[in-house]
Amino acid sequence: MAKALLGYVGGSDPRLLAEMRRLQQRVQDLESELGRIQAENDALAAAASHDSLLESIDVPQAEPALT
Image 1 (cartoon, rainbow, N blue to C red):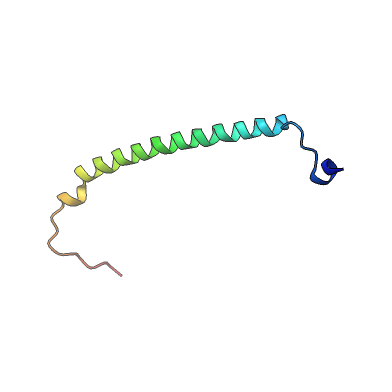
Image 2 (cartoon, rainbow, N blue to C red; image 1 turned 90 degrees about the horizontal axis):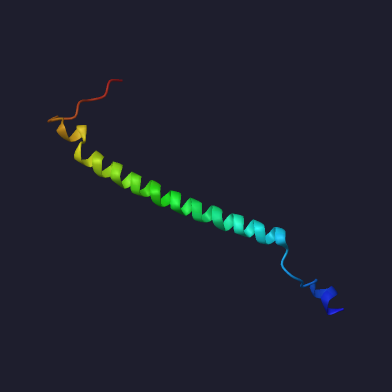
């Protein structure tokens, strides 16, 4: 009777375990991709700060926009 009230507490469902493993692997894949993309972004930002075209342009005063 107690099992009927609380629900059957048997072994884990193999489909649920497979889905959980699949999701854990997906999370690991996304975390590694995020790390790779962040490293690439940092490298691009560092390269952009060294070779910025805007820093090499000498404009003494901003020009007004045309309306």
